[in-house]
Amino acid sequence: MDDAEKGIYDNSANLPVLSTPAAAHLADEKKEIVETYSTAAGDVSPPSSPTEKKPQEQQPPAKKPAPPRRKVSKWIRFQLWFNTYRKFFTFVTLFNLAGIIMAALGRFPYAENHLGAIVLGNLLMAVLMRNELFLRFLYLISIYGLRSWAPLWLKYAVTSILQHVGGIHSGCALSGAAWLVYKIVDIVKYRAIQHPSVIATGIITNVAVIVSVLSAFPWIRNNYHNTFERHHRFIGWLGIAATWVFVITGNTYDIKTGEWRSDANSLLNAQELWFAVFLTIFVLIPWLTLREVPVEVEIPSPKVAILKFQRGMQQGLLGRISRTSIMEYHAFGLISEGRKSGVHYMICGVQGDFTRELVQNPPKTVWTRELKFAGVGHASAMFKRGIRICTGTGIGAALSTCIQSPNWFLIWIGSDQEKTFGPTIANLIYKNIPPERMILWDSKKRGGRPDTVKLLKEVWDSFGAEVIFITSNKQGNDEMMQGCLEAGLHAFGTLWDF
Image (cartoon, rainbow, N blue to C red; front, side):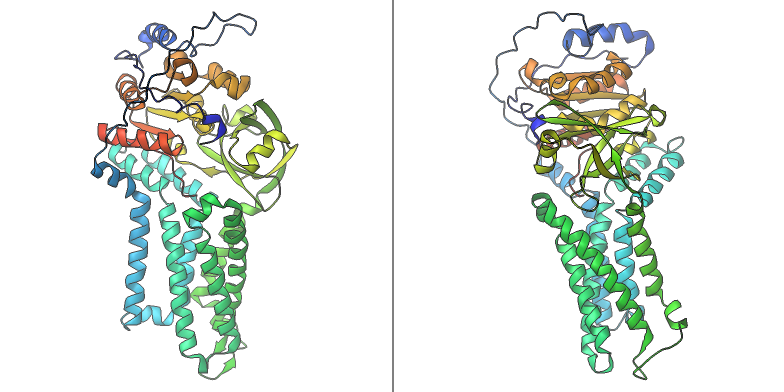
């Protein structure tokens, strides 16, 4: 929970939610909806002009004692825990483990002759599942290939796959490290016929890959971000360099004759070489788009920095920024009115040293990759109608979808949003989203947060939604995901896997 989200959960009173009209999405009902939401949420409609005085605000209701949390069955909790990410991870690791066991028993002839190819094949797949270009390609073919004809169950399945491909990334990386250990053990076992340089580079590669994989474990990644970056990135690069040496030496040294081959045919025909080539290319692609770009920083409150960049963006994308060229990159959602708007924004809530420094010492330029990362919100283009619900700084990942598509409903829960996030974000909302297509819930004015599940149910029915995308902190995400699954609402929540 960052500073901009503090206050949302201070009072957990489940306040009553006003029922929305049964046909909220029909044009002839718009007048009724505007009046309803204006009455229920005085903060939905902006003043008609900057100089117009707002009516005197009523005192916020007295805080009520927090009600007991909604009881959720163990089956619901298990389904959310054993999500597609963990299913992918389990399948990939068990599949590779079975291969290692079969190879050890002498029942996997391909592994005996192409151990290096299996190692590099796993590592290449791990890199692809985190590569900006490859993921954008997957989203592109999924959106344009399915949105006009596919049944909802297929769209849900594909969206879940796109959101959880990190399970393949983690599974293949761990499996690649395991196969590499097996290969080194095999080389050392027959060290009498191997050249010392092959053994040495193999051990270096092994250590580098294992350190890179271990540094990405969730506890390290979430609690020691810079440690994760230094080891996962730089030791990973060292591992790639060592892999090249390992592949070249391993395929040019003839263990039968004990001599180095002078011809290049054996190397060019080696599967390991081409896996190494594509692995290197996909690692390099995002870094080739790295640029230092000018940025304007707005500080509406001590809790938030609003960064303004040149260039319009399509919805559902994330950008990574840093003050240096290769260290401490952080991802934030991008807000833009569209590709032709000419600008896009990032909302950076104060959460750690990096974001605190953005507020205390705003930069004139930052480093960023011009090839942007597709978040799960990018898949919203696959559905006809949906709900985008967010809390606090989650508006940064959610707002573009509702601005760029008239078929998406925005629910934003926060504490004193207009004061915290400033006029830029408020103007983007009021300019592009009509009152009948949004609910802005100020937990400070209303004395607490709403019953989010009840609110989602009512908007789901009245708006005719097909899907819900959630961007919130862990507490809010878990509550909403559990409630939606129990209520039969199809929702995709926040992940903390990258």
